[in-house]
Image 1 (cartoon, rainbow, N blue to C red):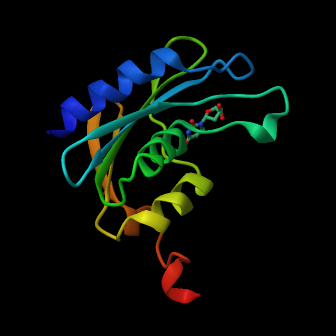
Image 2: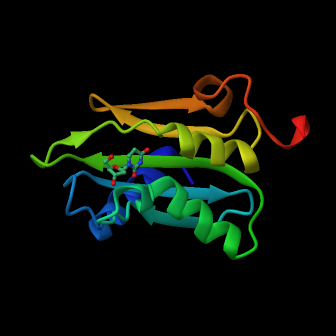
Amino acid sequence: MNTEELLSKAAKALENSYSPYSNFKVGAALLSKRGKVYTGCNIENASFGATNCAERTAFFKAISEGERQFEAIAITAVNKDGKEEAAAPCGICRQVMAEFCGPDFRIVLKQNGEIKVYTLSQLLPNAFNIKQI
Ligand code: THU
């Protein structure tokens, strides 16, 4: 699966975003090493802290179905004005990625109309993970 296909699955997933508070819709598509894609959207809550990001929705769906190895995640977002926005994953989502993914795990974003691919080690250097415990 190429990065554009993964991004388009993320864009489709954001249609299910539940975001009445921010009106910021986020979609994610997570590619497992065996080639399966798990999508996710952000799910907000009146108690704001209970909000779940699109990336973690995708990870938790995958983990709960037995997946443990991942290649890449694509993330797209649309802001309240309907503009496509680059959404870099938040710190909590980066930490969840570090639980299950190595430093070469790829994070695919569309920034200013351009596809950008980062590694997890670029977005979360010196991560705290299972090896430190
Ligand atoms: N959000 C995500 O889904 N992923 C991110 O990495 C950044 C933030 C969501 C959470 C909330 O529903 C909305 O975007 C505004 O913060």
